Length: 435
Image (cartoon, rainbow, N blue to C red; front, side, top):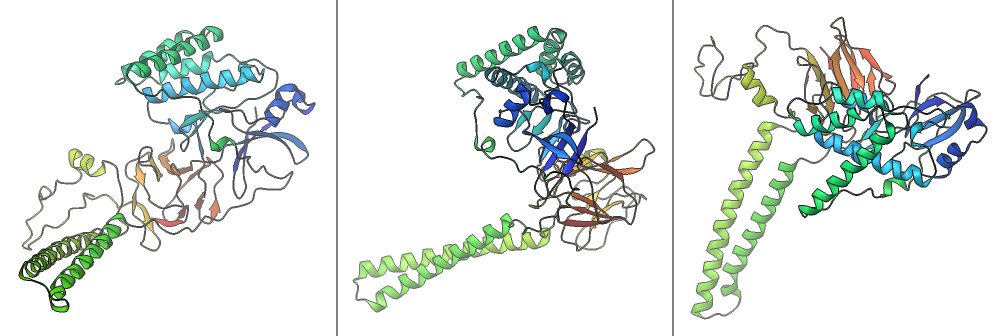
């Protein structure tokens, strides 16, 4: 089946050719067009270049095969997949739609990072599909160190050749999970409708070519340490005012000896507290200046580098490095003759992206990204750098909201292109040079 992607100014769509019975207004399509069915990718029939197409909204959602590329399918995601499939099966039964028309392959299942749920594609072409191949492939993804996930995938894989038995087994597993949650006094996850399903997507107009969307140039998020230092400075100022007020009270108003003693005590304690707060504020300010606003965030990168020996531990020097006569130790970069290959910010405001260890996923969500860029124009999972079969560096857009650019050209959703030294790379609103 031919598959295409379309990106306009706000949305990204997966486009499939419309089957003949859909064009005639079949019952499955009429149900899809008239209802927002939870668990399905929103779908609409549009005419593009004179041909009928089914457009599925995949905006900011990750394709299953890309999302789990190079990583095992952990137990939490297996449970979530079972939960979402069971809930969708009940939804389809309410609309008298056949569950066998779901495209259960890794290429047509998407994961929504914001809603934390799987979304499936319903293709109303009248053909029934056996989900055996999908669940057999899932059983091969069983992680070695996660026995619960491996056991669950093996049980599902054993029923893969019998769809009715498979879904019945999935319903039993979901029921067992809810019973366990009740026994432990925890609220079970429910198949609930939320606000995200109430808003209708904006579909592409008939005909026309893809509209290139300029990256959003939203402002940077505030630095947490800077906000804390401002708060400490405010507290110090208030304490100093309290000190002045307590000292001036006996002068402005007549008071006996006991009131005078209390005012002096309050003035002394406020003055001391103001001094302590000011000292803490000074430490925070100095720390923020040393780290700078563009310090990179590598989850566990420093510890992993020390363990692998690429960067010596703090306070130590590299083997064979002479001791420095200065009062501070020289920072060892750890290249050891290698070229410092990576992406460097065009204006120096963004962190350097090291491309020595690949594959590397860049995004804003630390749970799923190897390199975190805390910029509002960057998607949770934005772009992935890897090498192709010949060893050449490549980057692939991960269906990002604001797009990935190479030398001024906006990449198509999930497009993979080679990157060479001297190329200009743009991730959202952040511009880099490869060198």
